[in-house]
Amino acid sequence: MKAKPFILFGLSVVLLFAAAAYSVSIKVKTTDNSGIYTTRLIAGQHTDIGEVIVQADNTFLYIQYQIDLDNEYTLFNTHLWAGQDLAEMPVNRKGNPALGKFPYTATQLDSKSWAQQISLYSLGLTVEDICLEDAAVFFAAHATVTRRIDDLSSESETAWAEGEPINPGGSWGMYDEVCLTCEHPCEGDTAWALGQTELDDILPTDRWGWVIGPYKNQPAEILVRPLYAGAEQNDIANGTIVGVVYVSYYKSNMVCTAYVFKEYELKEVHLHADYDLPTTADPYQFQQNDLLMVGPEETNGYAATFLGENYNGDPIYVAFHAIVCPRENDE
Image 1 (cartoon, rainbow, N blue to C red):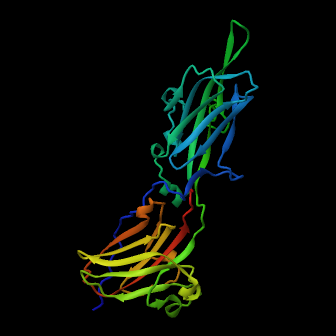
Image 2: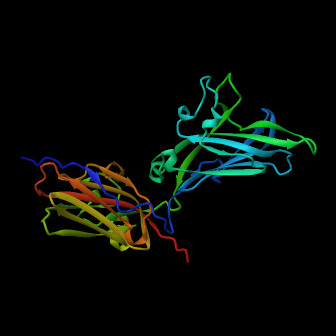
Image 3: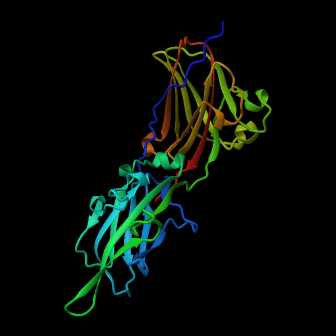
């Protein structure tokens, strides 16, 4: 009787979001790819007095009010809200923005500029989330601005970052939207763990790559395979060993671990581990697909644990594919 396929159950990634010489970068998506989004700051519904600037990095969203230096207005107070869901913006019973409940404020500024940094965490976002799918962030930026009329008097106006009406038919408050995206400085090279079987021997494909197995584990045995990048046509003479892949058996679990040398970094991992040979040569259709972040140099690796449902040590096939990038040197 054929053994029941074991289930991909858990993932423990030892490659975490630590800063390194090369890393993915979160930025605001813009048409010019600058990562700097601007919208006009409008006073009294009609007067253009400056701009609101939005930028991002791997930790924060930055929103800055900037009145044009040659404009007679200055910022007096500000109210700012940002979030992933417009329904979470504080509003009153009439649907107009409830400025007193906006989370980021400043008073008595008497300044041309004011900026607020907002953690991605507080917005419910992580670097991994954004790298898996671009994220929309809405913001509503309000200010009271003043200008001097004479030595004894001044006047004030309401100002908003230009965008869409928060409450059509209500107050003239506006919101705008930015898209956060993930930028990879390196597109990456294809890498496969060296195995006994070439993909094009078992599948109709032009892809290169290998399958390890059938591997019958033993409790104290660790299978070690080199990770080759750029070995076109399955010729290791064309490739470079960039790391090592380990397959082992531990307490009824199958464990696959990979580490790349300090000159490289893992960007993606795709893993097939099953009693049967893979039915596709496309690693993006393997059971385990993980987009990885850059980790500290001493732990630049990946680990996945596969818990077996009725797994009894029968032979398995493993195909380990990765995208690797050379590590840039800060020196």
